[in-house]
Image 1 (cartoon, rainbow, N blue to C red):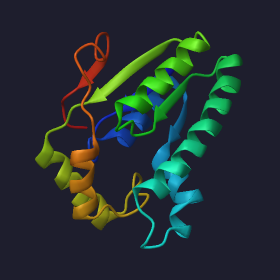
Image 2: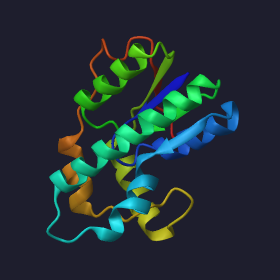
Image 3: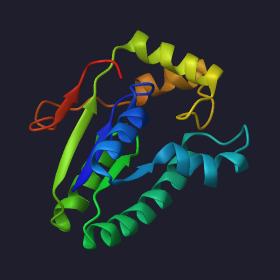
Length: 164
């Protein structure tokens, strides 16, 4: 089983993934952890969205290889990869379908002000889910970058609207 978790910045994706891990014992892949460990230390102030997208594409390829291995031995996977763009979600849906992996979509539909407050709090507290600071301008950018799912994409999905 592959669990796809997505929602906008501050929706509670990583907290939800950890909760799912506690319940299911599946392997969690969190894009923020990968980015923080592999790329953020090398980022310069001149590196923009394209810089991140190139690296995320490489991470996606590695994660897919690992998912195939894990699923082949019966380990479920939780993909906490942000999935801000529909095209990226569709790519992973197609990947799962091509390998006949069952899937569950989890969409965290959290109100704007709740998400913004969480990000501010996370930046200050630097707790368990903190990987890097999200500035107000980064948060605002993600508001416009995120593509909400359509009703057809959410058919059969678990939609989480309560606070975590």
